[in-house]
Image (cartoon, rainbow, N blue to C red; front, side, top):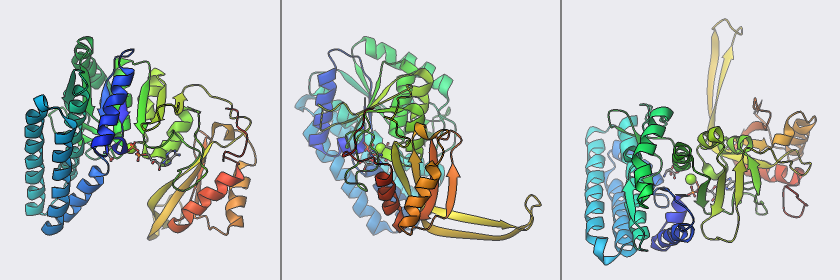
Length: 413
Ligand code: ADP
Ligand code: ASP
Ligand code: MG
């Protein structure tokens, strides 16, 4: 089970996550993966940028907000017996975080390696707190970093690639004995370490990826991702008010959706699960009665529909390289533009169905939205295009309507 940042945003949410573990524990053995609390990672990113510029007053403010949040939550989420030990650990991590930030601001240098080290504090702080809250319910737990759990990666700081074979072997070696002692490993999502022990991160949204890696290594029956929405939806509910939950999605579709920004999942999240054919459930941690979305290897008929969902990636740039003669190596002009976004229309039913692109671009054109770049994925599960950032949400809504993805239309998948 993996809990996202919103599912661990405060003491009440952490206690709720602990109760979910307790609720499903009797009939399951499980490994828990924790994200950073709420938007801690975003704040750490900001701290890094500000420290590099020497803006120490602003750094200090955000830093103390993070430190206080974790101290307060640790105090409230733990029981008396283990509180002192937990608070000592949080203090130590807070101090280490402070020193890291001081280093960046002295040197005015933020390398990919030091940035990963800085970002790792989000999950390193949240994980022992969640472990303590679960322990509070009388369940044995052990908090571990990704590296302690056995996840080893290459040195591509910022977007590290896990070394699958060695990681799978180490994860089994380290976690299986805990599981057989009925001790729940609570593992930091998002972070791993190189062979020589330097902390790396798997890329933003990487906690879901940690969960599928651990699931694949241990060959679990299922991987559950608890989040703040009812499942994978036909569009981001913040953009389309009547977006609907997709009860079933294939790995291929989930991959395209995550690649194009849906649920802010790391694009490689589904890979380990797909390779081992382990179903992934995406569920709302506030609504346990809902089944959420089941992602599996089954290609389920989409009730005759070609499109399943529309997603969007914000804040992308366009680099236009103008050549003289194609293939001759003469670059005439290079132009960079900001403020664009990618909109993607996804669905396995699109494969081999004529006329989908015409409907997409017809609908967008009727709203007078200018399309800058067009691409079709090799899987033929998606058509994506680039528009100005401010027109992106409107393009998503138009296409959601065009392909009748809202709840007023009958679905039978
Ligand atoms: P977590 O903290 O649980 O990892 P994220 O913030 O990373 O959650 O992702 C969940 C958010 O993704 C939702 O709150 C929702 O606004 C957004 N989102 C974007 N596209 C989709 C989609 N197609 N289905 C569901 N959620 C989506
Ligand atoms: N905390 C990390 C992030 O915000 C990883 C995650 O939440 O999945 O990107
Ligand atoms: Mg996330």
